[in-house]
Image 1 (spheres, one colour):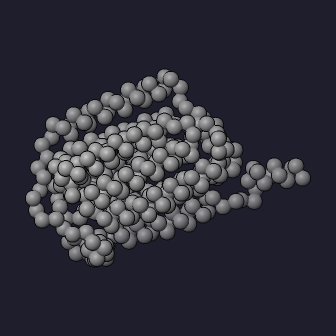
Image 2: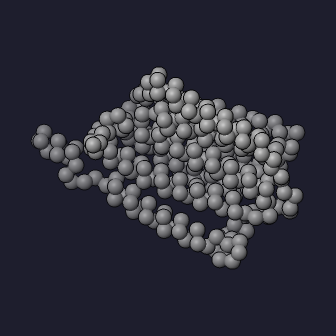
Length: 105
Length: 179
C-alpha cells in the first residue's frame, strides 16, 4: 500500500533521478557509463508512468503496459549499444568518446 | 506509517545510488550501484501493487541488462581502470544546467494540483496482463505487443551482426602482419 504518500513525492524522485542521469550523460567520457546514465533516465520515466497510473487512473492499466514496453525497448537498446561498443573497442582499442573520432568531419 | 518509512528509505537509496552511479570512478562499481537503483525501483513497483511489473523489472533490468553491462565492462576495460572524468569547467556547466532544469521541473510539479482518483483499482494479476496483451479491444495492447516482438527480433539479429568478428578487422590484420 502507498499509505499517505502523495503523488508529488514519486514525481520528485523521478525528476531528480532523470536529471542525475542527464548529468552523468554530459560528464562521462566512457561509452558504457554513458549507457548506464541512459538506463537511469529510462528508469525514472518508468516510475513516472507507474505512479500516474496508480494515483490518477487506477481503473486502467495504460501506464503499466507502457512501462512494460519501455523495459523491453531498454533491453533491446542495451543489447544493440553493447554490440556497437564492443565493435568500436575491437577497431579503435578504446571506448573513450574523445578517442573515437574517426568519422568526425 | 510503515509504508511511509519504507518509501523514504527507498527514495533515499535511489537518490544516493543514482549519484554514485554517475560519479564513481570505477566502472564496475558504477554498474553495481546501478543494480541497486534498479532493485529499489522494483521495490517501489511492489509498493504501488504492480507485482508483475516489479517481477519484470527484477528479471529483465536487474537480471539481464546489468549482467550485460558488467560483461561488456569486463570485455573492454581493465578491472582496476579508473574512468576519465570531465574537466572542472564541463562538470560545473553541466551541474548548472541540470540544477536549473531540475529546479524548474520541481517547482512545476509542486504547484500543479493533482487530483487523485478514487475509482476502484483495476487488478494487475498475470491473468489480466496476459489477457490485455492479446486482446485488440478497447483496453487491449495487441498492436504494441506485436511491434515490440518485431523490435526484439530485429535488435537480436542486429546485435549478432554488429558484434560478429569480421575477417578483415584491424586486429586480425595486425595479427597477420606480426606473423
